Image (cartoon, rainbow, N blue to C red; front, side, top):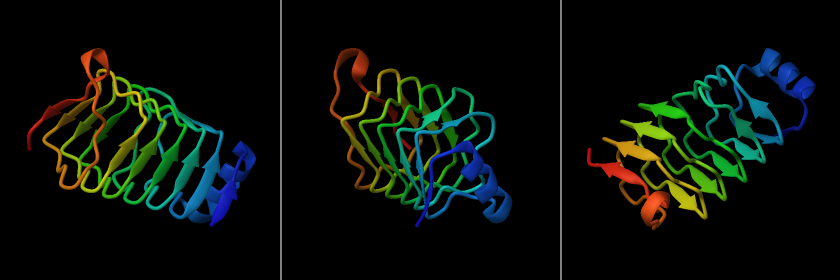
Length: 137
């Protein structure tokens, strides 16, 4: 697995490989458009600015201590994705495959899941403002 922890390394990697599949990215901020695939990637301490266009393939990805506030995932493959201690506040998942996804100790206030496949997903049990809004598929 390739390890990236600077913008220079990220730029070089993207010029050569065009995606972040099977890479480990630490403490970087993403804005604008994310790479076309982040499948099986590991992201630690990263921030994804609101409005960042996330890729369609994030299957098997691991996000640890990341900020993904105000993002929108549309028809994305998030099969087996793990969010650990992430801030997903105000994030929307629309028509996504979240089968076997895990949300562990995450902030999910005002997060919406609409028409998603949640088969075997481990969703957080919140209450009040820190509860997921789930609309069946």
